[in-house]
Length: 293
Length: 283
Image 1 (cartoon, rainbow over the protein chains, first blue to last red):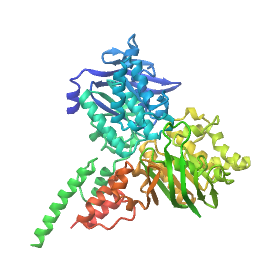
Image 2: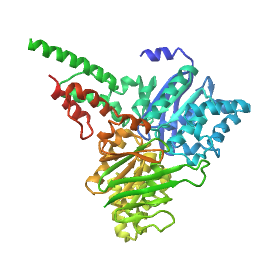
Image 3: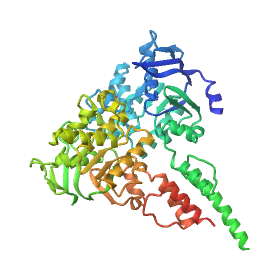
Image 4: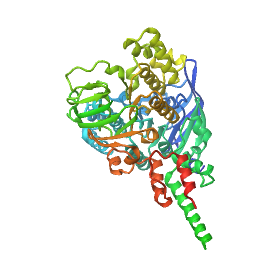
């Protein structure tokens, strides 16, 4: 696949070799090997318990693998560089309450930046810039506990993005965001990814988020089920079912139309479905007009 | 009997540095035995409104008529039986499971509402079965469950107390897509077969629209829309203010409606319904 060829020219940001992880007697990840080139946007899908979050936490060093090697930007994760490597990885949890430390949103964004020993002026600049990016400016002096679920998730995102990590991991981080803001966030991520060559890993059940990525990794029972282009993999019903994903409405409509004898192919995008339907309607109208003559 | 808010206002007092009016003179009417959805941008007051339904938050002004009870503004006493008749599932359900096992959590509600041990076990068992919680899960501590299992357990614990109204704050967050559909169908069955009133706060319109009888949109502590979903789908400004987009099903239906002469919508257009309509309209 073309995207793989292009991306594999770049040095890997993350390289997992034969990673296994056990929780008690349960094997959560089994001999998993994945190479993620620097600057690639990878989505990870799979049913609950498939090992998605475990994979992300191993990359971030929150968990330690029982077997195998993890190399981040050419350096082994479990080495004397551990803390340095981790400072380059931003991790956003599904429950934002797990990562608030400050008494206000401003303090919370500042906390990570102060730990990076950045000058005060730069800290203030970053707080303002990332608050604006995530539409948080009016909430900067609020206590995180008084924010709604969606606002908390945005605040958590701002705190992590302000540290300008080279690898960003979003673990179901948009589950509380409404559709407009989720789209806004995807646009921001697309921009950051393009401008800063940010390596992004998004764990999600949302088709829109999965298709925003360049590459989709599907996990099942701790093993690699599929690895390829989202647009290709997400049309395969067997994979959708294995990951307990729901086919998007556009794809459902294409399939229902086919059952009705109208074959416009398959697409995940409603605009594309409309385009194909217009083309079909134009040809049908033409045929109808011709037959009247 | 229904649910009516009369001039209800609420302002957060503690912790907030900005003392915002979270509910601003709310006037709202909801029918019982319906599936009701509340949407709105983050911070619009959705969760605050929900927490007024079972007295977790108390209005500063106004009153709420709920079934045959009146929930007065603070500090007047709450009506007896309110907590039993209105069950609330929190946005973060792990906050409401506190027993050593899920089974004990399921028993807690009925026993607390003075059911006998046998009645409580029957109610807990029935709720567990309804939510698909097997004996292995029931024997576990809430800390041992996945986020999806915790959510199912929290809903089962509410169902076991047999409330007439079930209020759920973002019930599908962190669930897999097909589990979300299953959960919505389970809740719809509770509404249709058990004649319970379901009130759901969500940011995901696509998931709830196929089941929703009444949809309410909140913006900055006010109700800006209350009515049937197909009517709201035409109000793009209202949706936009609430941070919502017209779902794909409606977008496609509206785009095709005029060219194909499709009828005005009364219900959610499923892919099967829209495909059949397209087929019928083609020359």
